[in-house]
Length: 612
Image 1 (cartoon, helix red, strand yellow):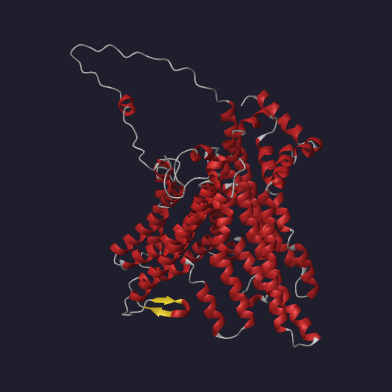
Image 2 (tube, helix red, strand yellow; image 1 turned 90 degrees about the vertical axis):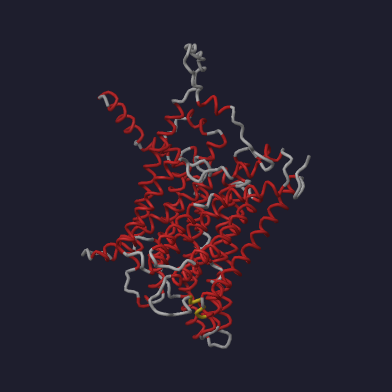
């Protein structure tokens, strides 16, 4: 870089750092535009109403339990009971705020740039004097106004609970610091992936996986340090993960529960870790967006193609026809189901190079795990199954949610609805395409356990069990995503609602019911009901299948500990997985029927048969 050019850039940077210019640029006009747009969307009010309703139900359950327990108590006993329940209310509100802020940050910011590209308005930003960092800052800050309102929903309740005693202000502050820092990290990751993604649902899924990777890296590092016996303050690596830090805060609030942790220091480290990653991802996003805008600004329409005549054939020499001319004569057989034909040809990865890179990275990871832990290690199979199951279900919730809403965002839905296709043909084609795009994670699981079977470690029936446990729930989640895509105009909203349904049914509802029963009853009954509530969740059942599928050296005939039911033999566990698959297959058909009915009603077309 020449000296005059460097001097001009330094002068420009110094000019932008002036207080008057900086105050005018931050947050900037794009912030005002995004804040006004998000304030006018119906999804904004639906999200706030749903968050308020869930919070109200959660707190109502806690206070109903308190009312049943304190009906025959004296005033002093009631005051003591209020001091006991105050930590429970605080933890419930803080965890709810943490989860809802993170999910909303992923959904709101996933379409920051890719939606501008899909609408054709990204080129309009080139005509403004805004820099890349101002565009990203305005997008993230403007679309995150919704998060501030949601974060403040539980603040009055937490301040009121402090009157009961038992909860200090520092606990509320560090809990909110964890929630806000995690939401900021999720927002920057979603905006970064939005730059190079074609769909907002794809950016949301990639941001979710990146968020999980960043949060899981410190515990993995801690385990590696412990495995190799490296000295030092290794225990602090694990507290950089914000969910673990939130658990530490919860444990200290309940009297530490035997966990030797320093919750405040752990929460501070975790919040600082998330903020540092947020700044780094933001800077990388600015460079990425700047490169993209430079490429768009330098793009010009290609000149008219010059027709070069074919050389005259040489006598006695056979002329070879170019390959592209021969390929042009080959017609594509679309068939009678064009939507299905198109959706089945949608690729999971952008290019074959990306697929090869990801496959090689996963292969290298498994080779390292086989070398370090051994392919016969039971914990290796259970951990791989749990992680792969969660990724598969989250992918199913995000991939299918842009089926119809993505067509609407791309302004191609009117063209699709102008065809004589029936509602079922459109919905079934969209569902089949979304379900096919989930092939990578089952392929990884199948390859791992096939190698384990060839090594004589697991039984072959394990592959059947995992297929019956994981594939039908993934299909049901895909079908619910297609249904929600017919209800909402934005794919990010449909994906967020679909994930809320998944987490609420498989995690939130069992925890809420289990907590209520645990506080109102005593003994083994509460634990049994809680375990039964978790039985529809495919992740713990898949972990049970992976653990029971390992060939033991002993002669045990009941290798499957099915929660409160007891240990099951291979025959009865296979029967349970068949019933499990049939139930989720029924829900898949129900969601597809609901989606078909809604599309037929909104577009005025037939349900099953194509028009002429």
